Amino acid sequence: MSSRILHPGLRGRLMSADLAAALIHDGDNVGMSGFTGSGSPKVVPQALARRIDDAHHRGEHFRIGVWTGASTSAELDGALAKVNAMDLRLPYQSDPQCRARINAGQMDYIDVHLSHVAQYVWFGFFGPLDVAVVEVAGILEDGRLIPSTSIGNNKTWLEQAGKVILEVNSWQPAGLEGMHDVYYGTERPPHRKPIPLVHPNDRIGEPYLKVDLDKVVAVVETHHADKSAEFSPPDATSRAIAGHILDFLQHEVKHGRLPAELLPLQSGVGNIANAVLEGLNNGPFKGLTAYTEVLQDGMLEMLKSGTLASASSAALALSPAALAEFNADLDHWRRRVVLRPQEISNHPELIRRLGIIAMNGMIEADIYGNVNSTHVMGSSIMNGIGGSGDFARNAYLSIFMAPSTAKGGAISTLVPMVSHVDHTEHDVQVLVTENGLADLRGKSPRKRAELIIQHCAHPSFRPELQDYLERARAGASGQHTPHLLDEALSWHGRYLKTGHMR
Ligand code: 0RQ
Image 1 (cartoon, helix red, strand yellow):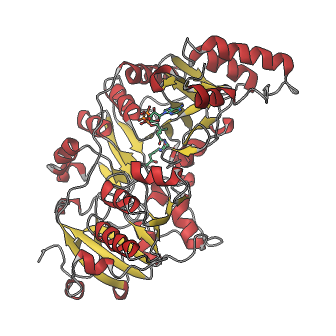
Image 2: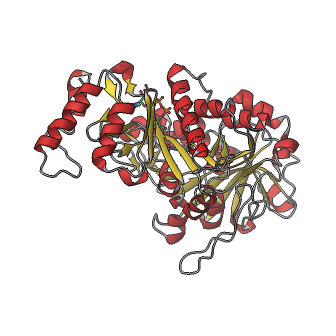
Image 3: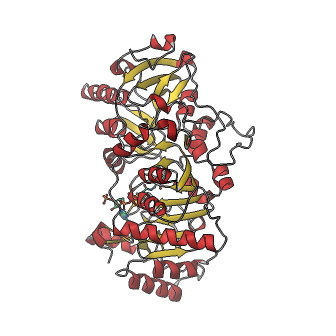
């Protein structure tokens, strides 16, 4: 028996993953831990997938709602999606099988801003939460829980669920204890008070999660690694994007619009975001801070070099090699890294107060600066909005970036009109591709269109975008945001018919 379970009563509730999964029933809403590949339960979801698959083979109805922090791993989303176990999934996901089920119309998906999830559960907007399945790194003698490599929505799941199943994962290093800051001061309106966080690395809560011990129906021991993604080494495109952002930030410092140590950084998921962090690490900046939701490899490198003095996040999102390096020196990192619930890491009040520089990926943007982060050709979900909206709308500077083409040059990521809007032109200040950067601050829609076409569009699509803009200026019904409505989405339609936007 693991020395990680110090509470005698909870030790008495140890059981197998299969027995724990048997406590989850058809129609249940289940809140699972997990944020990126970090901290999701490893064995109960797989046991549950087997149980549901068996039920389906017997012709029984058995599907559940799955609420998480953000994306999880193949052991959770992948295993459950494979056997069509999920009736509903929320919020962010990125598993290929999960995505396929959603896009085939076989599973409902609600794409919620990450900071909204916990409060919507508290408000009762999603109905009751029946079960929580939460990975922890250990249980103290008094029953408090040592969180794992992500906190996500775990505080809310533990508080709101009728029944709690704990996975105690001894693979997670014991040294994670003390790295977390769980704030217990959030109330429902009209009783809310200011959240007392004024510096990115402030600690305003406690290092442990609390749970009503009477609700814990099962404790399951595991020894399984987090399944985090590998990053591709930055290519010429992502390096060029990083270079434009670096030049821009230096320009802003020079003109007194940013301090020399910048403002706290938020950086989204993916290879481009990681390349931007690498660019920053090779740049002139020192003593920066991060207030973000995923701590990727690039950020660890920045912490190692001193470019970054501290980082606040909702989760670690490190590749296996970077995670091994991080785990080898937790005493060092505990002073520089703090992990928080996502309702705090992504809280609009704090993002606005701290003055975050938000840098997120996008699928496409239109000539007026509306951004689509989530949908391919208007109808198919890619991942979800994640935290990008929490940060973009409330940031000091809101930057969106992408290569100027996708699918081998067949798609222009700059289009006349986006096929789906996640971030409106009002929330987007800077657009960046490998071709350049468009600073949209203080610009009218007509000026924005010129800048975006000139600076961001790929040369092979630029003349067509320019032609569209000119004809829209000549023929639109209004001249504030000129569009030709019969043509605005024709680029997407053409791609679907011919495999090319041109
Ligand atoms: O698909 O792999 O099938 O070729 O989209 O594109 O270029 O690899 O970019 O990994 O940085 O992801 C917006 C999805 C970008 C991500 C998005 C296709 C492209 C490829 C991925 P393939 P890339 P990235 C904090 C912040 C929302 C959440 C967020 C994202 C795939 O950044 O999910 O920001 N953002 N959270 O081929 C059709 C286009 C396309 C396109 C790219 N215009 N049309 N397909 N693709 N552009 C983190 C959290 O919230 C947890």
